[in-house]
Amino acid sequence: MRIKTNIVKLLAVLAILGSLVAIAAVPASAVAASVTPNTGSGAVGASFSMTASNFAGTSILTAKFDGAAMTTAPTTVTTDAAGTVTFAVLIPTATAGAHTILVSDGVNTATATYTVLQKVVITSPTSKKGSVGTSVTVSGTGFSGDGVTADVTIGGKALVAGVPVDNTGSFTGTGTVPQMGSGAATVSASDGAGNVADVTDTFTVTPTMTLTPNSGLPGATVTLTGNGWPVSDHVTVTFAGASGVTVDTDSNGLINTSYVIPVAATAGVKTVTGTSGAVTATTTFTVIGRQVTLTPATGAKGTSILLTGSNMTPGGTIAAAALLFGGVAWPGAPTTISIDSAGSIFPTTLVVPTTAALGANTVQATDSGGLIAYGTFTVTKPTIVLNPTSGSINSSFTITEPDGFQVPPPVPQFKLLSATPTLRAGLEAHPLAPYLMAAETSRRL
Image (cartoon, rainbow, N blue to C red; front, top):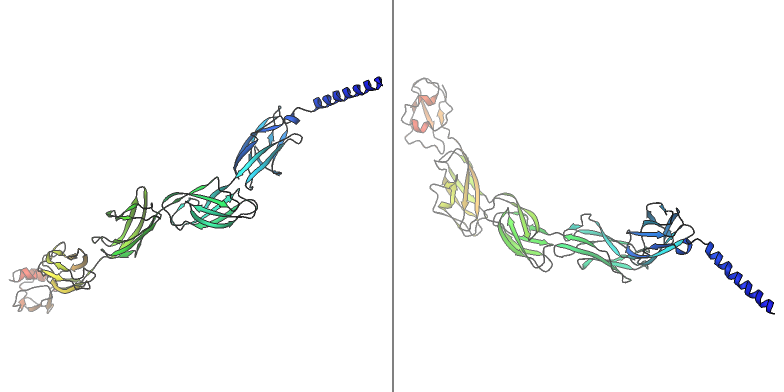
């Protein structure tokens, strides 16, 4: 009996020794392989760097994310003689929550836990800026893959709602920028499982300004609108670099007010600029010049013309000093010219000044309301008509006086006094020469 007991004890000792030998025979790396860090978090597309230790020396490692091969950097990961290497893995498209990264050399393995975060990115416009009403496309990753939808916001306001999320936790949605103030606005998203974006994007809202209508007369009242301005603030509006006025924005950054085009604005396309601090926007307005009508619009000095016009100050007047011909007060103009209740200038007959310069002359009329109208009158040389248009020395001829050429009466017949090269020289000795010299003639010897 005692011999049997001793045999049993001996066998037990031998078994223990065998186990110890078996354990010693197993490479140390099989029980000590590891990766550090063994936990991490980030969005889809992030790079996660780790160090593998105690793997087989000079062996090639592979990495899998929930069983699927991962992209690594470098592409081929090889341990050194001690079984150590540092490398990075690219986090693939995945749903929200914890996922397992498995690193292996074919014999030894180690794992790390990686938590995928929710992320939204603006994919259009690429500038990530624009005005209210701009179309914005957003993609999301790392959300729930359980068939829920996502709502996207910009600056806390809805951009697009009810966007389906696929089984990889990804979605794409497009919406338009709602009414909001200018500046940087956070773009975020949440899904039906309660996940909220951990990684957001930023869209810069830029202001706009519009004049309606965008063309008209000086002094016209138009509607000024705009959006995307700083909320509950002030905007300074300038016209062609001058005439600044201040308008207010509402709690949504909107402008909606009347605006008067400067009465002194000249014809042409003008830039209208709005400024609020560092924020600015521009638009254009085409000024249509207010016109006076001159009938006729050409003629010699002394020609009688009729002045009319419209779109002036209803019930106003034009003072003599405010009616200019060629930049100076029009000689002989009435003390006042009336304007009727519809803004039309009372038809007024005037005479082209004898001091007027030849060529185009600007006519300017400023009424009692400050409105300015312009016209152009072209002063031409007078032409006298001779009858007959040819003859010998001492032959008689008559002169027909045109409008605007004043020859003191009586105007009887004249005689050619000498055979000079031109009629002008032959008339120099005549008493009316000072008047005739001012005229062009068609008569030549």
